[in-house]
Length: 392
Image (cartoon, rainbow, N blue to C red):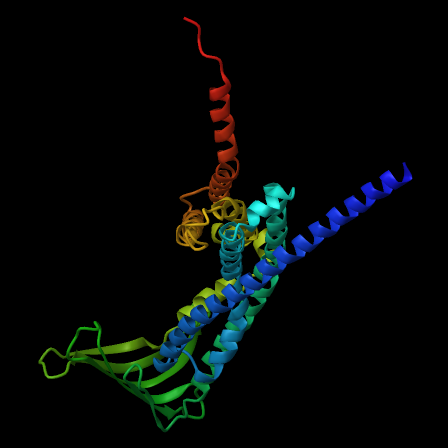
């Protein structure tokens, strides 16, 4: 009897040890594949974003010395959507390989049920959800706050570098400006001269010319949009197209000229910089939509795990990449619907509840139908086959 119990205990320990090895093997594969896919996606997205920043810098909207700090502070925001997508692709690749290499059939023959394999994937999804939650609720707003500070500092420095008594040029906007120093009693600037040549439409062959002269003026910045204006007093504005007789002369007492407009990055960072605590206390629809968006990002990984696990089941003849493209299309549809629901809540077209959460409920139902649908279909089919034939 003693030897019989000892054999049973050793068998149980051996089974637990085998399960532990299997868990470490699958989780290691999921982690390595997720990091690899995330690295590739980050490289693509950051390269594209960096090219946009370079274009803004060439147009005079962004200072060249803050390009890399802005990229560094924006890095956590890139991970919010890249990590769930990377984990989604990793699930399809890792479990798809188990099917194509017939390892899944061996695991099932050894008593490893698909539910246990799904539990391993779901545990990884929960870890990804925690990381995404930490990023989207705390780290990403912190980075956006620093981006906003960088743009504000740039706004102040760009005005301070305008030395009175010298010509200053912005090549990206075709702007030339000359400012005279103010008298001892006044603030701002004395006489002002501005010449600007710009194309209103990209297809316009000849640029439109604007010449402004004024007796005095001063700068001010719109704190909401970070757009800088030069307010001028008592002057003339001459507008027309070069080489044509359509010039118009306007005399003014006060005129505000847009000196430089805010970068779209500043507008988005100003909104993203709002802390999660502030969003919980706010009753504004835009703040509520942003809060629900941040909380929604936590649920993406577990929900897509419920969808990816049944989609990874493929025929060995099909190859491991057979369902990756349809699965990515499904994931992108998920994000598009979430973004559309967020915009609808911001505009008041959709109530906050269910709001964004209705999209999560929809994809949970899709995941449940994919996960339990084949088993239910087999039960219904076997029930029909086992039912007795009707007697005549």
